[in-house]
Image (cartoon, rainbow, N blue to C red; front, side, top):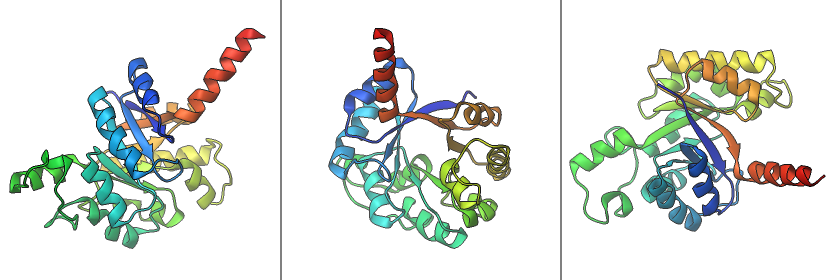
Length: 239
């Protein structure tokens, strides 16, 4: 199956979602960790993006129960959990993405139930369709990746190559052979667990290598970089 292409949204910009969908992006990741989005913006942007046909993930600002539940209750297709320290941390926080008996997500009443009541079928459907991707971007999480991938509340792995390179002592990410080796290893771990994987892959060589391993999706751009590239190219045309 062809890998999907996603982009990061770091600002409250619905037109960026519209334009990205028009040119062919499949998926948006609302970046609550490094962007400046708040919950009110997310509450507007998630249903907008879904109405445009964009799968909508939220990278939460921190992997805590309130942040995870808010993103899922708003209606996001799934959450991406950053800065997981190790297996124990991943086990504790990924449970908040799934309802009991699988996990410990709290049950509220909002958009996901069409503002009605919940049913047992709703619980089963939510646990199946709202995805939880565990970010692998720390040294200990890398070492524990196989066990993290096997956790029942983890639907897939998401590789954060920039922080992973720093955490593993290589300095700033350059898509070095060691970066590529980490990518290949984690893709293999996810496949071995029978689960999808994805990566932040703005670097063209890194993206090319990622696509060889058939990710579920790659995040290849962001709204601010797109603006920068667009303004730069328009200025160059005038030179």
